[in-house]
Length: 556
Image (cartoon, rainbow, N blue to C red; front, top):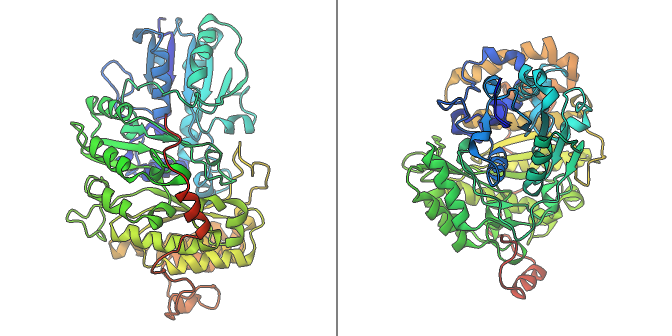
């Protein structure tokens, strides 16, 4: 009986504020669901308001809610988690909107790690989404309601051919503010909906609606798009749009008023906020942004999503300007930090490869204003500068880019070796041909196809992470004891014998035992092939192009 006319929902794992850490939330996309109950420190339980509505959900769902509230009464809309669907989906419900960030766990990093437990292992976030989309309340009332699914991972459902099985009326792709009202109006009338909608994004001069309620992690958009043109990324082809400061601050105040003590600045590249022409960082605008957010009552912590190395190398003053707040108001702490409270700033940075050949082919705009040949120097210098200012990034690195050769992998191993003393987290992942990218039709590599060098790269990355985070001898001892058991019971059968010695490196076995079977030898003290340069020179053509342009671009 009853129910709300419009119900918006998101799965628990996509809404989770687990340990106030975005990268720890990513664990929910990598851990197999069947082992979730054994992991006592992993939680997807979220706070619920007294009326049963969600306290926080992904920011994209809050934008949809805000768009609908421009025309509909708040009493007609509910935003909830799966456990509360029975309370809000009833005879009066006509439209259910569901957020899909990574519904099947097949984006970068997600299903890669679940596969270590078996190729059919379902990660926690995929199980959570399936429980939501197949919820009995939706099936019980399906004859009088429409199910609309949207979000950055909605393409996965179409790709796997699950739309009919999951009884989804419409799948929405892209920035949907301009499409939300017409779609939901049609659903409320009971009329037919298109099976899918490709959104071109809001008009360049428009501003997304101010959110009305709290997002997960206090997430607040500050930019959309990137424009650097990486062929494996759909966002790379979209020009940058910056949100006005007063709009951002209103959204931050909304978060704080509902109990958020952290503001997460959501962006494809923090250094493109209010950018000048050709990716020129607007340092005064960035500093004003951080200082303004920090003054909002109730906000104790400020975090960031993504950034890039090239702007820092070109203009190290960025770190001088931002670090007092980015580090001083960070929620993250680590013993390696020189900050009085051991705090460090964290953001996601894409390294992707050290191969200049692959870099030129797939992502040459990522280094601008530097040449592709300078990419290893940009990474080394950028990491050095970030670490000096207590910025410890989370860096992605793609294994198995199309056409990757043994020499390409060796170059990545050499750069990895040169970064061995750095303060960072490195997340290797297999190449994924994402929808709406120039590489969407390329073949997707599988673990069973990886070379010995690629396995070595993969597990050397995780040995770095283990060394960086393990504070007790027992933490490493568990790996030393468990690795051989895993290899002989499962790993060898699934991935072949090439996994053995890379796994033993992860298990902290001595290098003298490994050196005959691995490319890198950490026990002989050999000098690194790459060294951090004193300075990375900007090519003359880039200097002239910057000098000839003034003004701003890409701002809403």
